[in-house]
Length: 252
Image (cartoon, rainbow, N blue to C red; front, side, top):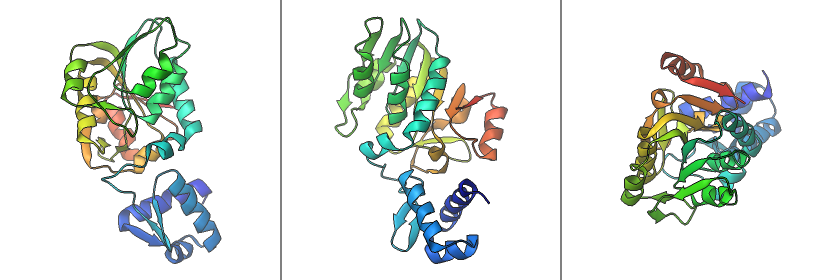
């Protein structure tokens, strides 16, 4: 068993049980406690588990990891995903870009495009793209979340509903095995739903850690996507759903 296979099995085991001790994992995988500690630390750094004394538990389904932690997590993978997604967006396109650290990396990857019209409810995305004289950047009105520069609320939804764009680029906090797209904040979800509804094509940028997280609020389903951009092969159940619903899978 490779290190990646063992770590994926650890995540599955913790998800089934809710908690796993170092002693249990050492016995189960027939490796040293030091190896398991390194695995648990790596998985915790990716946000896949919560490191607790003597073992590991599940990440919270009600509270997201802090913005600054998420910004640093899996950055190299996010950059590869962003570059691949950006390559599928033609010049002179209109697009929504919503809240999320992955989408901020996508914005960086789009900086060398020409003639884009971007509507966003993410102040960080607007700041990244504002210096391109060839872009028209429109910022949605609404309540600004201090923790991450996201704009949410009824005014934001009303604003988004005024547009119909070529591409909606969305992020997500978790993808369940039944294809549910999951988030932590119901207000953020309602804005994302408006973006999905008002986009001719919907692109989701999600690194592999999102396949093992279970936030509490349902945003939608993978069937509503046109393409999923990620960095590793999704679980078999999710691949089946993508194929059944004719959703393109792009692995960076």
